[in-house]
Length: 133
Image (spheres, rainbow, N blue to C red):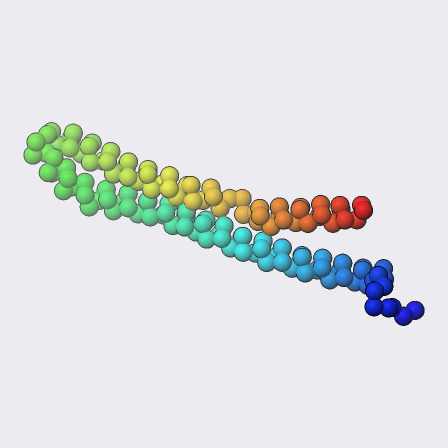
């Protein structure tokens, strides 16, 4: 059976086109999911680095500055009060860094490609709608 110039495509041709388009769509969605997971992994790494940096800064800050600041404040205050003031300040800075790190980690979790999944849901709904016609 030969096809004329303005004839409708055959069912076989339509199925072949659909198969090709679905295949292309799945590949595109997989690429999107991969890019999304890569971004979330990067955020998790930044968050973990910030948490680690807060710990290191707290440790070195306590070791290096406590002695000098306590001695400086001890010139005008009781030595024990000077130590408490300096220690509280360092712990406050470490707490702020820990909160920043926690926020970065929270943005990366769960490591699910949300945008890609939403697109796939839309695509499935569109396919179902088209099939129902």
